[in-house]
Length: 111
Length: 119
Image (tube, rainbow over all chains, first blue to last red; front, top):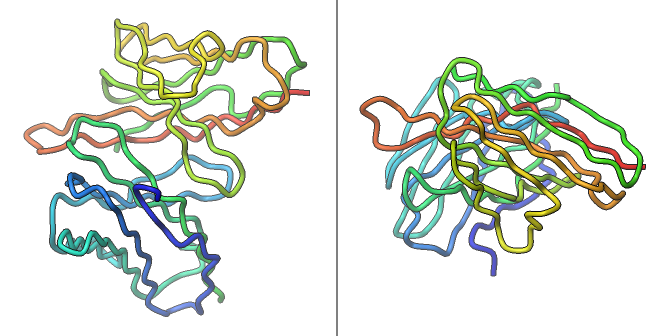
């Protein structure tokens, strides 16, 4: 079993829809959770990071962490074609340790 | 924001030659940099962790004599793929860790990646 599981998609939704991206994990020691966006042939770009459980909102993006269920989510409101990319979840045990990535979900927003 | 650059952005080389890839943190000092490898439609695979002034720590299964890492300064790390073969063709991405002043965690910022093709 992989430490971090993420549905690879592809996921296609119409413009303006709410997108929900999810990851599950098995290591209960993970405490730091991040979401990265990666456009084709580019390096990942940090979107959100959260520590422990709870919600964090930044513009159209909301990150949610449920440590009891070992489940994290990223919600994108009012999705735009420019949001089309691969979204990677990542997590670490402490802030100074290496990241463990999910496989990434390929998202396409249809105009 | 924190910017990380990589050079070159793409390189094509003949089998048996060595290729050097540079990773620079442009507007911050990074005591730790990471090197990843990514195959098409797959996630990032950590190859090694590079700390300034010390030897890199390699992940299991990564040949340290083949992938030479040098972290000579707080803003520069290099990855040299020695005696490259076609199976080394991949997308290599570095990241640099930024320590947030007063924050509880460090954040990794990624370079744009280098696409290596070995003929």
